[in-house]
Length: 75
Ligand SMILES: [Zn+2]
Image 1 (cartoon, helix red, strand yellow):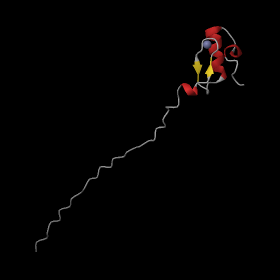
Image 2 (cartoon, rainbow, N blue to C red; image 1 turned 60 degrees about the horizontal axis):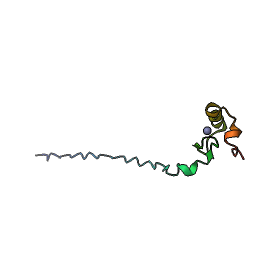
Image 3 (tube, rainbow, N blue to C red; image 1 turned 180 degrees about the vertical axis):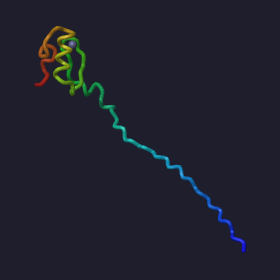
Image 4 (tube, rainbow, N blue to C red; image 1 turned 90 degrees about the vertical axis):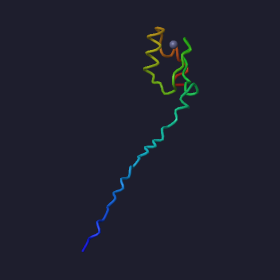
């Protein structure tokens, strides 16, 4: 008795993992986000800039204190 050979077709499925990572648009990270401006050289800093960085800028660039370059900082 002939046994019908079963042709087993393995279907290989290519699983395309579309890692659609919703990269958050940082388009808003522009000038609008820079509200801290050095009153000495008009350089703009992000609102998230920490005091130590501003203080460093003031001292290194102008030999001034933070309050001299950024009088409105923290107010
Ligand atoms: Zn400056």
